[in-house]
Length: 297
Length: 310
Image (cartoon, rainbow over all chains, first blue to last red; front, top):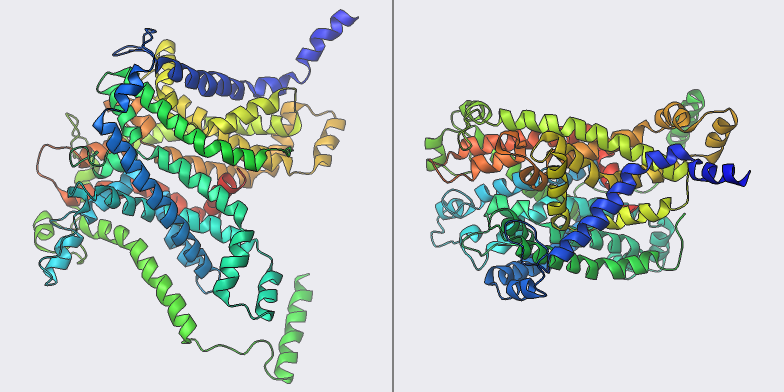
Protein backbone atom coordinates (compact mmCIF):
# COMPACT_ATOMS: atom_id res chain seq x y z
CA UNK A 1 0.00 0.00 0.00
CA UNK A 2 2.63 2.48 1.06
CA UNK A 3 4.75 1.41 -1.87
CA UNK A 4 2.10 2.42 -4.35
CA UNK A 5 1.47 5.71 -2.58
CA UNK A 6 5.04 6.93 -2.66
CA UNK A 7 5.39 7.40 -6.41
CA UNK A 8 1.90 8.84 -6.65
CA UNK A 9 3.05 11.74 -4.47
CA UNK A 10 5.86 12.50 -6.87
CA UNK A 11 3.54 12.31 -9.85
CA UNK A 12 0.78 14.30 -8.21
CA UNK A 13 0.33 17.61 -9.91
CA UNK A 14 2.39 16.17 -12.75
CA UNK A 15 1.10 18.58 -15.40
CA UNK A 16 2.18 21.59 -13.38
CA UNK A 17 5.62 20.07 -12.95
CA UNK A 18 5.90 19.36 -16.66
CA UNK A 19 4.80 22.92 -17.41
CA UNK A 20 7.51 24.22 -15.10
CA UNK A 21 10.34 22.30 -16.76
CA UNK A 22 11.43 25.29 -18.89
CA UNK A 23 11.51 27.48 -15.80
CA UNK A 24 13.47 24.93 -13.79
CA UNK A 25 15.96 24.43 -16.63
CA UNK A 26 16.38 28.16 -17.15
CA UNK A 27 16.79 28.84 -13.46
CA UNK A 28 19.21 25.99 -12.78
CA UNK A 29 21.14 25.49 -16.01
CA UNK A 30 21.32 29.00 -17.46
CA UNK A 31 21.06 31.35 -14.50
CA UNK A 32 22.76 29.38 -11.74
CA UNK A 33 24.85 27.04 -13.87
CA UNK A 34 25.90 29.63 -16.44
CA UNK A 35 26.83 32.17 -13.81
CA UNK A 36 28.82 29.65 -11.77
CA UNK A 37 30.55 28.46 -14.94
CA UNK A 38 31.63 31.96 -15.92
CA UNK A 39 32.83 32.81 -12.43
CA UNK A 40 34.77 29.53 -12.26
CA UNK A 41 36.44 30.05 -15.63
CA UNK A 42 37.36 33.63 -14.72
CA UNK A 43 40.10 32.08 -12.58
CA UNK A 44 41.66 30.28 -15.56
CA UNK A 45 43.93 31.42 -18.35
CA UNK A 46 41.48 30.45 -21.11
CA UNK A 47 42.36 32.06 -24.41
CA UNK A 48 40.62 30.88 -27.57
CA UNK A 49 38.85 27.99 -25.85
CA UNK A 50 37.73 27.63 -22.24
CA UNK A 51 40.24 25.49 -20.31
CA UNK A 52 40.36 24.62 -16.65
CA UNK A 53 43.89 25.78 -16.11
CA UNK A 54 43.66 27.78 -12.91
CA UNK A 55 45.83 30.84 -12.46
CA UNK A 56 44.22 32.33 -9.37
CA UNK A 57 43.46 36.02 -9.55
CA UNK A 58 45.77 36.70 -12.51
CA UNK A 59 42.95 37.73 -14.84
CA UNK A 60 41.67 40.21 -12.27
CA UNK A 61 45.13 41.69 -11.74
CA UNK A 62 45.51 42.14 -15.47
CA UNK A 63 41.98 43.53 -15.74
CA UNK A 64 42.58 46.25 -13.18
CA UNK A 65 45.87 47.23 -14.79
CA UNK A 66 44.42 47.51 -18.29
CA UNK A 67 43.80 51.15 -19.14
CA UNK A 68 40.85 50.26 -21.36
CA UNK A 69 39.06 48.65 -18.42
CA UNK A 70 39.81 51.59 -16.16
CA UNK A 71 38.43 53.97 -18.78
CA UNK A 72 35.36 51.74 -19.06
CA UNK A 73 34.77 51.85 -15.32
CA UNK A 74 35.24 55.61 -15.19
CA UNK A 75 32.79 56.04 -18.07
CA UNK A 76 30.28 53.76 -16.42
CA UNK A 77 30.48 55.80 -13.22
CA UNK A 78 29.98 59.12 -15.00
CA UNK A 79 27.24 57.70 -17.18
CA UNK A 80 25.64 56.10 -14.12
CA UNK A 81 25.59 59.24 -12.02
CA UNK A 82 24.21 61.31 -14.91
CA UNK A 83 21.55 58.70 -15.69
CA UNK A 84 20.46 58.35 -12.09
CA UNK A 85 20.33 62.02 -11.22
CA UNK A 86 18.90 63.40 -14.43
CA UNK A 87 16.40 60.69 -15.19
CA UNK A 88 15.05 60.84 -11.65
CA UNK A 89 14.87 64.65 -11.63
CA UNK A 90 13.56 65.08 -15.18
CA UNK A 91 11.25 62.09 -14.88
CA UNK A 92 9.75 63.40 -11.66
CA UNK A 93 9.40 66.98 -12.91
CA UNK A 94 7.68 65.86 -16.10
CA UNK A 95 5.37 63.60 -14.14
CA UNK A 96 4.54 66.42 -11.73
CA UNK A 97 3.78 68.73 -14.67
CA UNK A 98 1.56 66.11 -16.28
CA UNK A 99 -0.23 65.58 -12.97
CA UNK A 100 -1.63 69.15 -12.90
CA UNK A 101 -4.90 68.03 -14.52
CA UNK A 102 -3.78 69.43 -17.83
CA UNK A 103 -5.36 69.02 -21.22
CA UNK A 104 -3.82 66.77 -23.84
CA UNK A 105 -2.14 64.74 -21.13
CA UNK A 106 -2.21 61.64 -23.30
CA UNK A 107 -0.60 63.47 -26.21
CA UNK A 108 2.23 64.77 -24.07
CA UNK A 109 2.79 61.40 -22.47
CA UNK A 110 2.83 59.70 -25.85
CA UNK A 111 5.49 62.16 -27.04
CA UNK A 112 7.68 61.79 -23.96
CA UNK A 113 7.52 58.02 -24.03
CA UNK A 114 7.92 57.21 -27.73
CA UNK A 115 11.75 57.16 -27.68
CA UNK A 116 11.51 54.31 -25.20
CA UNK A 117 9.94 52.17 -27.92
CA UNK A 118 13.03 52.67 -30.09
CA UNK A 119 16.09 50.49 -29.78
CA UNK A 120 19.39 51.79 -28.47
CA UNK A 121 20.84 51.25 -31.92
CA UNK A 122 18.31 53.61 -33.50
CA UNK A 123 18.76 56.07 -30.62
CA UNK A 124 22.52 55.98 -30.95
CA UNK A 125 22.48 56.50 -34.71
CA UNK A 126 20.05 59.43 -34.56
CA UNK A 127 22.13 61.20 -31.95
CA UNK A 128 25.30 60.42 -33.84
CA UNK A 129 23.76 62.36 -36.70
CA UNK A 130 22.43 65.21 -34.54
CA UNK A 131 25.80 65.64 -32.83
CA UNK A 132 27.78 65.36 -36.05
CA UNK A 133 30.03 68.46 -35.93
CA UNK A 134 29.98 69.05 -39.71
CA UNK A 135 26.22 68.85 -40.21
CA UNK A 136 24.49 68.74 -36.84
CA UNK A 137 23.85 71.11 -33.97
CA UNK A 138 27.35 72.66 -34.04
CA UNK A 139 27.10 73.54 -37.74
CA UNK A 140 23.60 74.97 -37.35
CA UNK A 141 24.60 77.25 -34.48
CA UNK A 142 27.72 78.36 -36.39
CA UNK A 143 25.60 79.17 -39.44
CA UNK A 144 23.50 81.40 -37.22
CA UNK A 145 26.58 83.61 -36.84
CA UNK A 146 28.17 82.24 -33.70
CA UNK A 147 31.22 80.96 -35.58
CA UNK A 148 33.35 79.99 -32.60
CA UNK A 149 30.61 77.77 -31.16
CA UNK A 150 31.95 74.33 -30.44
CA UNK A 151 29.82 71.34 -29.48
CA UNK A 152 31.16 68.05 -30.75
CA UNK A 153 30.89 65.61 -27.85
CA UNK A 154 31.27 62.56 -30.06
CA UNK A 155 34.70 63.62 -31.37
CA UNK A 156 36.12 65.01 -28.17
CA UNK A 157 37.41 62.26 -25.94
CA UNK A 158 37.08 64.25 -22.71
CA UNK A 159 33.32 64.80 -23.09
CA UNK A 160 32.23 61.91 -25.31
CA UNK A 161 30.51 60.07 -22.46
CA UNK A 162 28.25 63.10 -21.95
CA UNK A 163 27.21 62.90 -25.59
CA UNK A 164 26.17 59.30 -25.01
CA UNK A 165 24.36 60.25 -21.81
CA UNK A 166 22.28 62.85 -23.69
CA UNK A 167 21.04 60.14 -26.05
CA UNK A 168 20.37 57.73 -23.19
CA UNK A 169 18.36 60.33 -21.29
CA UNK A 170 16.32 61.13 -24.38
CA UNK A 171 15.50 57.46 -24.74
CA UNK A 172 14.84 56.55 -21.13
CA UNK A 173 13.32 59.48 -19.21
CA UNK A 174 9.86 58.75 -20.61
CA UNK A 175 9.79 55.44 -18.79
CA UNK A 176 10.80 57.06 -15.50
CA UNK A 177 8.16 59.73 -16.03
CA UNK A 178 5.51 57.02 -16.48
CA UNK A 179 6.55 55.21 -13.32
CA UNK A 180 6.59 58.48 -11.35
CA UNK A 181 3.21 59.45 -12.74
CA UNK A 182 1.77 56.14 -11.61
CA UNK A 183 3.27 56.84 -8.18
CA UNK A 184 1.82 60.36 -8.05
CA UNK A 185 -1.61 59.04 -9.03
CA UNK A 186 -1.37 56.64 -6.11
CA UNK A 187 -1.15 59.53 -3.63
CA UNK A 188 -4.44 60.13 -1.85
CA UNK A 189 -6.26 63.28 -2.98
CA UNK A 190 -6.97 64.07 0.67
CA UNK A 191 -3.28 64.64 1.30
CA UNK A 192 -3.34 67.48 -1.21
CA UNK A 193 -6.50 68.90 0.31
CA UNK A 194 -5.02 68.77 3.80
CA UNK A 195 -1.85 70.49 2.62
CA UNK A 196 -3.90 73.19 0.89
CA UNK A 197 -6.01 73.75 3.99
CA UNK A 198 -2.86 74.11 6.06
CA UNK A 199 -1.53 76.63 3.56
CA UNK A 200 1.58 74.68 2.66
CA UNK A 201 3.00 75.79 -0.71
CA UNK A 202 2.83 73.22 -3.53
CA UNK A 203 6.58 72.78 -3.88
CA UNK A 204 6.90 72.13 -0.15
CA UNK A 205 4.11 69.56 -0.30
CA UNK A 206 5.95 67.79 -3.09
CA UNK A 207 9.29 67.89 -1.35
CA UNK A 208 8.32 67.00 2.19
CA UNK A 209 5.09 65.06 1.86
CA UNK A 210 4.65 63.52 -1.57
CA UNK A 211 8.21 62.42 -2.32
CA UNK A 212 8.67 60.67 1.05
CA UNK A 213 5.34 58.94 0.45
CA UNK A 214 6.59 57.76 -2.95
CA UNK A 215 9.60 56.03 -1.45
CA UNK A 216 8.68 52.57 -2.84
CA UNK A 217 8.28 54.01 -6.34
CA UNK A 218 11.64 55.76 -6.08
CA UNK A 219 13.34 52.60 -4.92
CA UNK A 220 11.91 50.49 -7.75
CA UNK A 221 12.80 53.18 -10.26
CA UNK A 222 16.30 53.35 -8.84
CA UNK A 223 16.75 49.61 -9.27
CA UNK A 224 15.45 49.73 -12.86
CA UNK A 225 17.79 52.59 -13.76
CA UNK A 226 20.75 50.93 -12.04
CA UNK A 227 20.16 47.62 -13.85
CA UNK A 228 20.00 49.53 -17.14
CA UNK A 229 23.23 51.41 -16.45
CA UNK A 230 25.38 48.29 -16.06
CA UNK A 231 23.93 46.83 -19.26
CA UNK A 232 24.75 49.82 -21.47
CA UNK A 233 26.25 48.42 -24.64
CA UNK A 234 24.29 48.85 -27.88
CA UNK A 235 24.06 52.61 -27.44
CA UNK A 236 27.84 52.98 -27.31
CA UNK A 237 28.36 50.56 -30.21
CA UNK A 238 25.95 52.52 -32.39
CA UNK A 239 26.93 56.02 -31.39
CA UNK A 240 30.72 55.91 -31.13
CA UNK A 241 31.93 52.28 -31.32
CA UNK A 242 33.85 53.11 -28.16
CA UNK A 243 35.75 55.96 -29.78
CA UNK A 244 37.41 58.32 -30.25
CA UNK A 245 40.18 55.87 -29.39
CA UNK A 246 38.96 54.12 -26.27
CA UNK A 247 37.36 57.22 -24.77
CA UNK A 248 33.80 55.91 -24.62
CA UNK A 249 34.41 52.24 -23.84
CA UNK A 250 32.08 50.59 -21.31
CA UNK A 251 32.44 47.31 -19.37
CA UNK A 252 29.79 45.40 -21.36
CA UNK A 253 31.66 46.18 -24.55
CA UNK A 254 34.95 45.17 -23.00
CA UNK A 255 33.46 41.77 -22.16
CA UNK A 256 32.06 41.25 -25.65
CA UNK A 257 35.24 42.32 -27.41
CA UNK A 258 37.50 40.13 -25.29
CA UNK A 259 35.24 37.10 -25.64
CA UNK A 260 34.50 37.27 -29.35
CA UNK A 261 37.26 39.37 -30.97
CA UNK A 262 40.40 39.35 -28.88
CA UNK A 263 39.98 35.61 -28.16
CA UNK A 264 40.95 36.18 -24.62
CA UNK A 265 38.11 34.40 -22.85
CA UNK A 266 39.66 34.60 -19.37
CA UNK A 267 39.68 38.39 -19.51
CA UNK A 268 36.09 38.44 -20.72
CA UNK A 269 35.00 36.15 -17.91
CA UNK A 270 36.83 38.19 -15.28
CA UNK A 271 35.31 41.42 -16.59
CA UNK A 272 31.80 39.95 -16.68
CA UNK A 273 32.26 38.66 -13.13
CA UNK A 274 33.12 42.20 -12.07
CA UNK A 275 29.88 43.35 -13.70
CA UNK A 276 28.00 40.70 -11.76
CA UNK A 277 29.66 41.87 -8.56
CA UNK A 278 28.59 45.47 -9.15
CA UNK A 279 24.99 44.34 -9.69
CA UNK A 280 25.06 42.28 -6.51
CA UNK A 281 26.24 45.32 -4.56
CA UNK A 282 23.19 47.21 -5.80
CA UNK A 283 20.59 44.44 -5.68
CA UNK A 284 21.27 42.69 -2.40
CA UNK A 285 20.56 45.65 -0.09
CA UNK A 286 17.44 46.44 -2.13
CA UNK A 287 16.16 42.87 -2.04
CA UNK A 288 16.84 42.80 1.67
CA UNK A 289 14.84 45.97 2.24
CA UNK A 290 12.08 44.93 -0.09
CA UNK A 291 11.58 41.27 0.69
CA UNK A 292 13.49 40.73 3.90
CA UNK A 293 11.25 39.58 6.71
CA UNK A 294 7.87 39.53 5.07
CA UNK A 295 6.65 36.71 2.91
CA UNK A 296 5.15 37.24 -0.53
CA UNK A 297 2.08 35.31 -1.45
CA UNK B 1 -28.49 52.32 -16.99
CA UNK B 2 -27.63 54.63 -19.86
CA UNK B 3 -31.01 56.29 -19.65
CA UNK B 4 -30.65 57.00 -15.97
CA UNK B 5 -27.23 58.51 -16.54
CA UNK B 6 -28.39 60.80 -19.32
CA UNK B 7 -31.47 61.72 -17.33
CA UNK B 8 -29.49 62.69 -14.27
CA UNK B 9 -26.96 64.64 -16.32
CA UNK B 10 -29.87 66.38 -18.00
CA UNK B 11 -31.30 67.27 -14.64
CA UNK B 12 -27.89 68.46 -13.56
CA UNK B 13 -27.68 70.77 -16.57
CA UNK B 14 -31.15 72.10 -15.83
CA UNK B 15 -30.29 72.81 -12.24
CA UNK B 16 -27.11 74.58 -13.25
CA UNK B 17 -29.04 76.74 -15.71
CA UNK B 18 -31.53 77.64 -13.05
CA UNK B 19 -29.16 78.55 -10.26
CA UNK B 20 -26.36 80.15 -12.25
CA UNK B 21 -22.82 78.80 -12.58
CA UNK B 22 -21.66 76.44 -9.91
CA UNK B 23 -18.37 74.72 -9.23
CA UNK B 24 -14.96 76.39 -9.30
CA UNK B 25 -14.60 79.70 -11.06
CA UNK B 26 -13.33 79.10 -14.59
CA UNK B 27 -9.68 80.07 -14.80
CA UNK B 28 -8.33 82.34 -17.45
CA UNK B 29 -6.83 80.23 -20.20
CA UNK B 30 -3.83 82.53 -20.29
CA UNK B 31 -3.12 82.62 -16.60
CA UNK B 32 0.52 82.85 -15.64
CA UNK B 33 0.38 79.29 -14.32
CA UNK B 34 -0.97 77.92 -17.57
CA UNK B 35 1.58 79.76 -19.68
CA UNK B 36 4.37 78.33 -17.58
CA UNK B 37 2.85 74.84 -17.51
CA UNK B 38 2.01 74.44 -21.16
CA UNK B 39 5.05 76.44 -22.26
CA UNK B 40 7.38 74.05 -20.46
CA UNK B 41 5.54 70.98 -21.68
CA UNK B 42 5.55 72.18 -25.29
CA UNK B 43 9.25 73.04 -25.24
CA UNK B 44 10.11 69.65 -23.77
CA UNK B 45 7.80 67.91 -26.25
CA UNK B 46 9.57 69.68 -29.12
CA UNK B 47 12.90 68.50 -27.77
CA UNK B 48 11.64 64.92 -27.69
CA UNK B 49 10.18 65.18 -31.19
CA UNK B 50 13.23 66.87 -32.71
CA UNK B 51 15.28 63.71 -33.41
CA UNK B 52 12.31 62.06 -35.12
CA UNK B 53 11.78 65.17 -37.23
CA UNK B 54 15.44 65.37 -38.19
CA UNK B 55 15.47 61.68 -39.12
CA UNK B 56 12.48 62.06 -41.43
CA UNK B 57 13.68 65.31 -42.98
CA UNK B 58 17.20 64.01 -43.59
CA UNK B 59 15.94 60.82 -45.18
CA UNK B 60 13.93 62.81 -47.73
CA UNK B 61 16.80 65.02 -48.90
CA UNK B 62 19.41 64.40 -51.58
CA UNK B 63 23.08 64.30 -50.53
CA UNK B 64 23.97 67.69 -52.16
CA UNK B 65 21.24 69.37 -50.16
CA UNK B 66 22.45 67.77 -46.95
CA UNK B 67 25.98 69.06 -47.51
CA UNK B 68 24.71 72.60 -48.10
CA UNK B 69 21.85 73.06 -45.73
CA UNK B 70 21.26 72.51 -42.05
CA UNK B 71 19.73 69.41 -40.55
CA UNK B 72 16.61 71.18 -39.32
CA UNK B 73 15.50 72.73 -42.59
CA UNK B 74 12.73 70.92 -44.46
CA UNK B 75 13.71 69.31 -47.76
CA UNK B 76 13.51 71.59 -50.81
CA UNK B 77 13.09 68.63 -53.11
CA UNK B 78 11.55 65.53 -51.63
CA UNK B 79 13.16 62.33 -52.83
CA UNK B 80 12.32 58.79 -51.83
CA UNK B 81 15.49 57.38 -53.35
CA UNK B 82 17.28 57.03 -49.98
CA UNK B 83 14.39 54.90 -48.72
CA UNK B 84 14.50 52.64 -51.75
CA UNK B 85 18.25 52.33 -51.48
CA UNK B 86 18.17 51.63 -47.73
CA UNK B 87 15.56 48.94 -48.21
CA UNK B 88 16.85 47.24 -51.34
CA UNK B 89 20.47 47.97 -52.27
CA UNK B 90 22.47 49.24 -49.30
CA UNK B 91 25.56 47.12 -48.68
CA UNK B 92 26.82 45.33 -45.61
CA UNK B 93 30.01 43.52 -46.37
CA UNK B 94 29.41 41.52 -49.53
CA UNK B 95 25.61 41.52 -49.34
CA UNK B 96 24.04 44.35 -51.27
CA UNK B 97 20.37 43.58 -50.86
CA UNK B 98 19.69 46.30 -48.31
CA UNK B 99 17.88 46.20 -45.03
CA UNK B 100 15.14 43.97 -46.42
CA UNK B 101 17.25 40.93 -45.52
CA UNK B 102 17.56 42.08 -41.91
CA UNK B 103 13.88 42.94 -41.80
CA UNK B 104 12.82 39.45 -42.82
CA UNK B 105 15.36 37.89 -40.46
CA UNK B 106 13.92 39.98 -37.64
CA UNK B 107 10.41 38.85 -38.57
CA UNK B 108 11.53 35.24 -38.58
CA UNK B 109 13.18 35.76 -35.19
CA UNK B 110 10.47 37.86 -33.53
CA UNK B 111 7.35 35.89 -34.45
CA UNK B 112 8.42 32.46 -33.11
CA UNK B 113 10.23 34.03 -30.14
CA UNK B 114 7.14 35.94 -29.07
CA UNK B 115 4.87 32.92 -29.48
CA UNK B 116 7.20 30.49 -27.75
CA UNK B 117 8.15 32.74 -24.85
CA UNK B 118 4.54 33.69 -24.14
CA UNK B 119 3.33 30.09 -24.40
CA UNK B 120 5.96 28.89 -21.95
CA UNK B 121 5.60 31.78 -19.53
CA UNK B 122 1.79 31.83 -19.46
CA UNK B 123 1.50 28.11 -18.71
CA UNK B 124 4.28 28.47 -16.17
CA UNK B 125 2.67 31.47 -14.51
CA UNK B 126 -0.61 29.56 -14.39
CA UNK B 127 1.07 26.57 -12.75
CA UNK B 128 2.71 28.87 -10.20
CA UNK B 129 -0.55 30.63 -9.42
CA UNK B 130 -2.99 27.72 -9.30
CA UNK B 131 -1.09 24.43 -9.11
CA UNK B 132 1.67 25.17 -6.68
CA UNK B 133 3.93 22.27 -5.91
CA UNK B 134 6.74 21.95 -3.44
CA UNK B 135 9.84 23.83 -4.55
CA UNK B 136 8.07 25.82 -7.27
CA UNK B 137 8.55 29.10 -5.45
CA UNK B 138 12.25 28.46 -5.00
CA UNK B 139 12.75 28.14 -8.74
CA UNK B 140 10.58 31.18 -9.30
CA UNK B 141 12.72 33.27 -6.96
CA UNK B 142 15.87 32.08 -8.71
CA UNK B 143 14.28 33.05 -12.00
CA UNK B 144 13.42 36.57 -10.82
CA UNK B 145 16.82 37.14 -9.22
CA UNK B 146 18.39 35.82 -12.42
CA UNK B 147 16.72 38.61 -14.36
CA UNK B 148 19.14 41.01 -12.72
CA UNK B 149 22.28 39.11 -13.71
CA UNK B 150 24.04 40.98 -16.54
CA UNK B 151 23.63 39.06 -19.80
CA UNK B 152 27.38 39.20 -20.32
CA UNK B 153 27.82 36.69 -17.50
CA UNK B 154 25.66 34.07 -19.23
CA UNK B 155 26.45 34.71 -22.88
CA UNK B 156 29.35 32.32 -23.24
CA UNK B 157 27.93 29.28 -21.42
CA UNK B 158 24.90 29.58 -23.69
CA UNK B 159 27.18 29.67 -26.73
CA UNK B 160 28.64 26.37 -25.55
CA UNK B 161 25.22 24.81 -24.90
CA UNK B 162 23.92 25.87 -28.31
CA UNK B 163 27.08 24.61 -29.99
CA UNK B 164 26.72 21.24 -28.26
CA UNK B 165 23.13 20.93 -29.45
CA UNK B 166 24.25 22.04 -32.90
CA UNK B 167 22.11 25.13 -33.29
CA UNK B 168 24.69 27.86 -32.61
CA UNK B 169 24.37 30.55 -35.26
CA UNK B 170 20.89 29.50 -36.38
CA UNK B 171 17.66 31.39 -35.92
CA UNK B 172 16.34 28.51 -33.80
CA UNK B 173 19.13 29.11 -31.31
CA UNK B 174 18.34 32.80 -31.09
CA UNK B 175 14.62 32.05 -30.61
CA UNK B 176 15.49 29.83 -27.66
CA UNK B 177 17.75 32.50 -26.17
CA UNK B 178 14.98 35.09 -26.43
CA UNK B 179 12.54 32.69 -24.79
CA UNK B 180 14.96 32.09 -21.93
CA UNK B 181 15.60 35.75 -21.20
CA UNK B 182 11.97 36.73 -21.65
CA UNK B 183 10.92 34.16 -19.09
CA UNK B 184 11.45 36.05 -15.79
CA UNK B 185 9.45 39.15 -16.63
CA UNK B 186 6.70 37.26 -18.50
CA UNK B 187 6.29 34.60 -15.83
CA UNK B 188 6.02 37.31 -13.22
CA UNK B 189 3.44 39.13 -15.33
CA UNK B 190 1.27 36.05 -15.84
CA UNK B 191 1.66 34.72 -12.31
CA UNK B 192 0.53 38.02 -10.82
CA UNK B 193 -2.39 38.21 -13.21
CA UNK B 194 -3.60 34.66 -12.60
CA UNK B 195 -3.17 35.08 -8.85
CA UNK B 196 -5.46 38.10 -8.93
CA UNK B 197 -8.24 36.12 -10.61
CA UNK B 198 -11.02 34.86 -8.29
CA UNK B 199 -10.11 31.57 -6.71
CA UNK B 200 -13.76 30.34 -6.88
CA UNK B 201 -13.54 30.22 -10.65
CA UNK B 202 -10.69 27.77 -10.48
CA UNK B 203 -12.35 25.70 -7.76
CA UNK B 204 -15.65 25.48 -9.64
CA UNK B 205 -13.86 24.22 -12.72
CA UNK B 206 -12.03 21.67 -10.60
CA UNK B 207 -15.30 20.44 -9.13
CA UNK B 208 -16.69 20.10 -12.64
CA UNK B 209 -13.81 17.80 -13.41
CA UNK B 210 -11.62 20.02 -15.58
CA UNK B 211 -7.90 19.23 -15.48
CA UNK B 212 -4.72 21.30 -15.74
CA UNK B 213 -4.87 21.96 -19.47
CA UNK B 214 -8.66 22.12 -19.59
CA UNK B 215 -8.80 24.96 -17.08
CA UNK B 216 -5.93 26.76 -18.77
CA UNK B 217 -7.36 26.58 -22.27
CA UNK B 218 -11.05 27.03 -21.55
CA UNK B 219 -11.06 29.40 -18.57
CA UNK B 220 -7.75 31.13 -17.94
CA UNK B 221 -6.80 31.84 -21.54
CA UNK B 222 -10.10 33.42 -22.65
CA UNK B 223 -10.31 35.47 -19.46
CA UNK B 224 -6.83 36.90 -19.65
CA UNK B 225 -6.61 38.19 -23.21
CA UNK B 226 -5.62 41.73 -22.10
CA UNK B 227 -2.55 40.44 -20.30
CA UNK B 228 -1.63 38.43 -23.40
CA UNK B 229 -1.82 41.60 -25.46
CA UNK B 230 0.41 43.35 -22.93
CA UNK B 231 2.89 40.47 -23.10
CA UNK B 232 2.89 40.53 -26.90
CA UNK B 233 3.60 44.27 -26.95
CA UNK B 234 6.40 43.85 -24.43
CA UNK B 235 8.00 41.01 -26.35
CA UNK B 236 7.61 42.34 -29.88
CA UNK B 237 9.32 45.62 -29.02
CA UNK B 238 11.91 43.97 -26.81
CA UNK B 239 12.94 41.28 -29.27
CA UNK B 240 12.79 43.51 -32.32
CA UNK B 241 15.05 46.03 -30.59
CA UNK B 242 17.55 43.47 -29.36
CA UNK B 243 21.12 43.88 -30.54
CA UNK B 244 23.38 41.95 -28.18
CA UNK B 245 21.82 38.50 -28.64
CA UNK B 246 21.54 39.06 -32.37
CA UNK B 247 25.20 39.87 -32.73
CA UNK B 248 26.32 37.00 -30.50
CA UNK B 249 24.08 34.16 -31.65
CA UNK B 250 23.61 34.72 -35.39
CA UNK B 251 25.82 34.81 -38.46
CA UNK B 252 26.05 37.66 -40.98
CA UNK B 253 23.40 36.21 -43.28
CA UNK B 254 20.96 35.71 -40.41
CA UNK B 255 21.64 39.03 -38.63
CA UNK B 256 18.51 40.75 -37.30
CA UNK B 257 17.63 44.21 -38.53
CA UNK B 258 19.28 46.16 -35.68
CA UNK B 259 22.65 44.47 -36.26
CA UNK B 260 22.45 44.98 -40.00
CA UNK B 261 21.44 48.61 -39.54
CA UNK B 262 24.46 49.24 -37.34
CA UNK B 263 26.72 47.59 -39.92
CA UNK B 264 25.29 49.68 -42.76
CA UNK B 265 25.57 53.00 -40.94
CA UNK B 266 28.87 52.43 -39.17
CA UNK B 267 30.71 50.73 -42.04
CA UNK B 268 34.00 52.46 -42.68
CA UNK B 269 34.29 51.93 -46.40
CA UNK B 270 32.60 54.11 -48.99
CA UNK B 271 31.17 57.60 -48.90
CA UNK B 272 28.79 58.25 -46.04
CA UNK B 273 25.26 58.64 -47.34
CA UNK B 274 23.51 60.25 -44.42
CA UNK B 275 20.10 60.27 -46.08
CA UNK B 276 20.27 56.51 -46.72
CA UNK B 277 21.46 55.99 -43.14
CA UNK B 278 18.54 57.93 -41.71
CA UNK B 279 16.04 56.16 -43.95
CA UNK B 280 17.47 52.84 -42.75
CA UNK B 281 17.27 54.01 -39.15
CA UNK B 282 13.60 54.98 -39.49
CA UNK B 283 12.82 51.67 -41.21
CA UNK B 284 14.31 49.78 -38.27
CA UNK B 285 12.46 51.87 -35.72
CA UNK B 286 9.18 51.64 -37.59
CA UNK B 287 7.91 48.31 -36.25
CA UNK B 288 8.22 49.16 -32.52
CA UNK B 289 6.94 52.68 -33.21
CA UNK B 290 3.82 51.34 -34.93
CA UNK B 291 3.28 48.89 -32.08
CA UNK B 292 3.70 51.76 -29.64
CA UNK B 293 1.32 54.17 -31.32
CA UNK B 294 -1.36 51.53 -31.90
CA UNK B 295 -1.20 50.02 -28.44
CA UNK B 296 -1.22 53.33 -26.57
CA UNK B 297 -2.22 52.77 -22.96
CA UNK B 298 -1.55 49.04 -23.09
CA UNK B 299 2.12 49.76 -23.79
CA UNK B 300 2.30 51.91 -20.69
CA UNK B 301 0.49 49.22 -18.76
CA UNK B 302 2.94 46.64 -20.00
CA UNK B 303 6.02 48.47 -18.83
CA UNK B 304 4.32 49.53 -15.62
CA UNK B 305 3.26 45.95 -14.88
CA UNK B 306 6.71 44.71 -15.73
CA UNK B 307 8.47 47.37 -13.74
CA UNK B 308 6.46 48.39 -10.70
CA UNK B 309 5.18 45.02 -9.62
CA UNK B 310 8.68 43.55 -9.68
